[in-house]
Amino acid sequence: MATNRTFTMIKPDAVANGHIGNILAMITNGGFKIVSLKLTQLTVADAQAFYAVHSARPFYGELVEFMSRGPIVAAILEKENAVEDFRTLIGATNPAEAAEGTIRKAYATSIGENAVHGSDSDENAAIESAFHFAGREQF
Ligand code: CMP
View: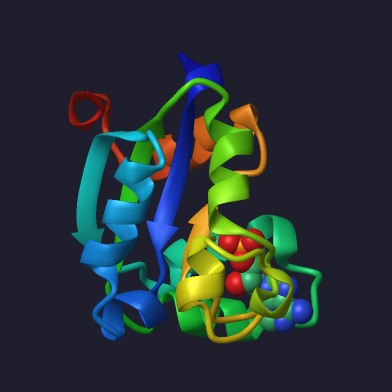
């Protein structure tokens, strides 16, 4: 199961700018099945915990503030080769380097406010999915 699932968030910038529907359409048109979905908001403590791996980075404080400042959409997605294919669909972290046709090319405004998150490994996909969804919310 883990190998064909990934975790994503539509970040506060993209939610605030009204892009939920268009981004979900790009995700489903990209061949991903949504198996969990919710509109929620991270507390500061949630964001600190979710991004603990980045706690030594200079942008950590900014990242925590940004990710907790408004609602997000959290989702678990299913597709063969989900982690890698979803990272291709979202594009580079820095939207200036994101390829045409990617979600970040269309909707990200900066390297920090980059519209969407995608897990970087099967292991992190499972950890991040469990952070947001109980087992009975994963279909
Ligand atoms: P993501 O890859 O989803 O998870 C880590 C996040 O840290 C990344 O998206 C960006 O939102 C943020 N990030 C990465 N690099 C920088 C940076 N140089 N400055 C600010 N934020 C960053």
